[in-house]
Length: 188
Image (cartoon, rainbow, N blue to C red; front, side, top):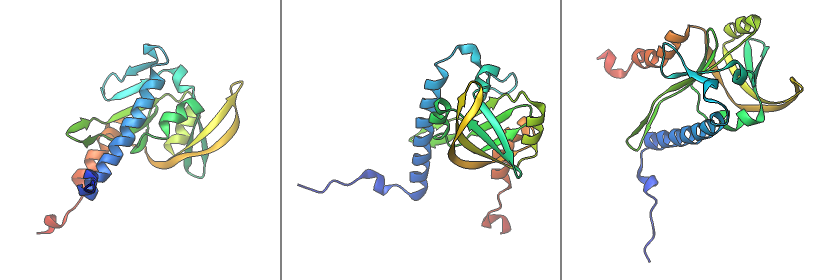
């Protein structure tokens, strides 16, 4: 019998990275959709000005908490939310009128997954101001008992940069970076 070859071995390093990112995105988004389907439709709405932005209701936003230390913000999430949040490949966060978490678009096997942004309501104005003064957002899994954090389980994933440039500019940030990158050909 002949030796079977894995077709993935023939892919370029960039294609392998894109497929890996797409598989994490598909896995995370399927877990997210499963979580989102467990509550009423009005608990998540489209942003009135940006159709790729989904806004969590105050009830769903209440499943998250914030802590601050040395210029860094930490988003605490409960075990039900940690399942999908640890898998989705976030690009960065945006601190504006809410905390927005951006999920990059990715292309794999001729399928384009558009970018999406999740908006978490921050009810405390002081927490929102502290968030706007932070430059990184980390993630931790927490347990809650009687409305209070009873245990911090630990880090959930790698931190992401936190932008304070407003939602509209934050949504355009990825494209601005791509346009600003200087290549060797720019010097010729």
